[in-house]
Length: 417
Ligand SMILES: Cc1cc2nc3c(=O)[nH]c(=O)nc-3n(C[C@H](O)[C@H](O)[C@H](O)COP(=O)(O)OP(=O)(O)OC[C@H]3O[C@@H](n4cnc5c(N)ncnc54)[C@H](O)[C@@H]3O)c2cc1C
Image 1 (cartoon, rainbow, N blue to C red):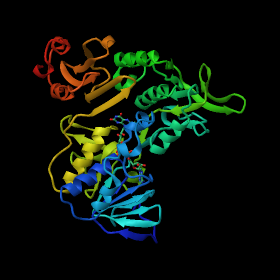
Image 2 (image 1 turned 180 degrees about the vertical axis):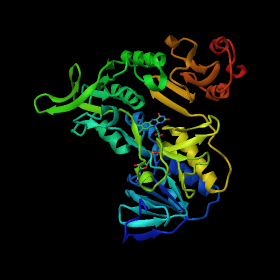
Image 3 (image 1 turned 90 degrees about the vertical axis):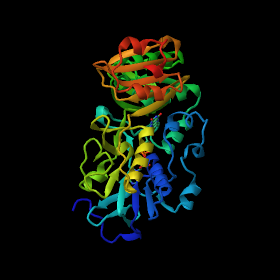
Image 4 (image 1 turned 60 degrees about the vertical axis):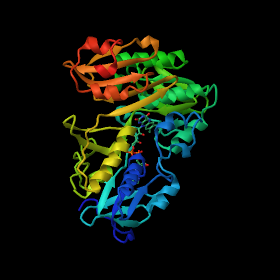
């Protein structure tokens, strides 16, 4: 069988629920399980040395020095001990024996399970679109996924230093904002004509570009990175098709890759992530997958999707607990996410397609506005920018057919739409 556990490994704990990956989804899963009266053993195997924490502050408040690790741990360390959750931190799961229902660990131990939950999340992309890039492993070149990554990046934030951010997605733009707050000079390189083009489209991308330009961020649009070099005389240089860009620090922010390999080797069905049904069960009924790694069937959208966002990790952790406890709830909510950059905060709900019609309610230049996306007159997604306590109303209109004039009419109460 593929993914068999190595011979000679010692048994470390007995059945119950084992979770691979000690991130946000895992934390909410085990919290909900114990809250729901689950009395069997629970073990979390996490390769990071820390108890579960939230990642959004790593590019925002923690990077800016405004939050400490204890401020973004969903549950304190004592909670795990008090609730008899065994934490095997600093330990990787190396293979799964699906027939024997056990997981081999990097410390040469193994754990058995009745139910296994895969919650291995993503890692930073260092290949992909930039697959030919050389020099990503040079000193001074960073990626950002873990607390350790964020700390290392923060250590390099000295006023006047030059940070070159490769990629103008969420993490790239959030780090650009945090670096400016620390007095660091920032240049963002992107092959696109605006930041956030793929997730948000050209109009909002142009708004984000203006915001960053106003705060001193420089952009090189239409720029393809060919590699990074380190010369003792010149320092770091990010090489592009039009020449080199000098840097003291480089952040490679070109997306994330789901940690699917363990599931693949165990023979589970994997698409862009581990394929699971609406109750988050994989092709093996004893194994569930949650969070960034799960490509789950959404009953509202009628298709499977993989979502790399905070809200989804929390909700899927709770839903998996319900499934294990015998509940019949299903994955039926719309994707939601948020960002904070400089004085802009926004929340998005829904599932826009890149060619959906864009309707802006209010004036982008005023700073506070709402964007709707529609397809054949039906709202597919909505976003509130610097306007608060309206996201539930926006969630409520998503999926409804509403005339564009009504959506754009600021004199109409959102709740009456
Ligand atoms: C810098 C940053 C900023 C973000 N900001 C936002 C934001 O503003 N808004 C938003 O909605 N979302 C944001 N996100 C996304 C959000 O943090 C993720 O969607 C969420 O963390 C996913 O939770 P998870 O539990 O699925 O995975 P993770 O939190 O990534 O946890 C997975 C854990 O599993 C571990 N692991 C992997 N393989 C193994 C193995 N074989 N054995 C043991 N352990 C393993 C990993 O090391 C990791 O600790 C951000 C992410 C990052 C990195």
